[in-house]
View 1 (tube, rainbow, N blue to C red):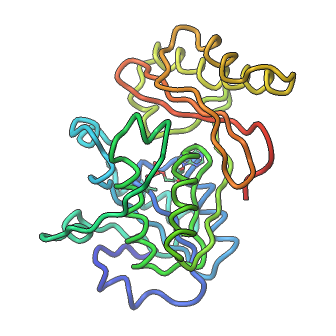
View 2: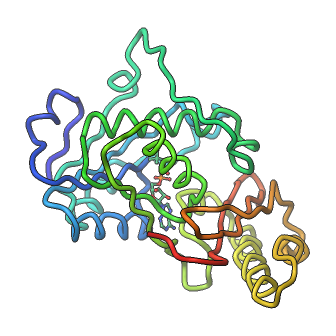
View 3: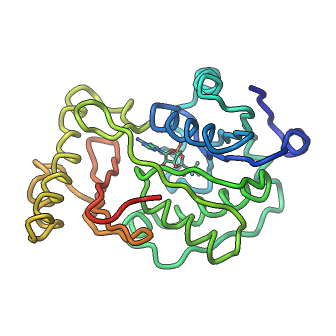
Length: 260
Ligand code: PAJ
C-alpha cells in the first residue's frame, strides 16, 4: 500500500476501475467491510483518510476526533487497500476556497447538525472528482449520509455507482463507531439501549403498529435527538440519534426492502 498526501502525487497512481472508500480514520471492522467490498469489485482500491473540518459543527467535537494514522494505515493495508490518500486540510481547502455543495431538505441528522451534510457532500464530491472512482462505498450505519450522497450523484450527474453496505456491530448489537471509544464502561452499558430500542421498533412495525413510538418508549432513559423513518432507494429504515454522556450515537435498522 502506498500513502500519498497530495493530489499531484495521487493522480499518476490512478488507473483501471477504481473503488473509493472515503473515511475519517479511527478504522474499525465497519470500515474493513467497505474495504473488502471495494477489493472484491474493483481493480484498484483507494481509501481516503481525512478528518473533514467542514462537517463538524462544534470545534470540540473536531478536536476530540480520534486520530492514529499509523494504526489506520495498518488496517487499510491488511484490508487490501492499494492507495491511502491522507491529505492535509490545506490540500483540500486551500486559501480562497469558496464553493460548497448545498444540500436541501435533510431532516433528522441534517436538522440536528446544521451544515453537516453540506460539509460531507462537498468533501465527497471533491474526492469523487480527484479519484474518479467507478464505485464509492458507504455504510448503512450513516443511512442519511448514504441518501445524501446518492442524491448528490444523481442530481449533479456524477458518473459512479454508490454502494451501501450493512452496519457492522459488536456481538451485543452496538453499532461500531469511532465514538464508542469515548464511552466509559457505564455509558457503554447504557448505549446498548439504542440498538435494542430500534429492534423493538422493528418488531412493532412487523406487527403493524407504530415503530417510532415503540422505539421512543424503549430507550431506557436515553434522550433521543430524533427517532425517524428514512427512505433509501425503496428501502425504509428506522433511525435514531441519542446522547450518552458527552457522546452522540446514531443507529438505524432496516424495516422494509433491501440496500444495494
Ligand atoms: P467515517 O465515520 O470514518 O465513516 C466512513 C464510512 O464507514 C462511512 O460510509 C460510514 O457509514 C461507514 N461506517 C462507519 N461505521 C460503520 C459500521 N459500524 N458498519 C458499516 N459501515 C460503517 O462517514 C464518514 O467517515 C465521513 O462523513 C466521510 C464520508 C468520510 C466524509 O468525510
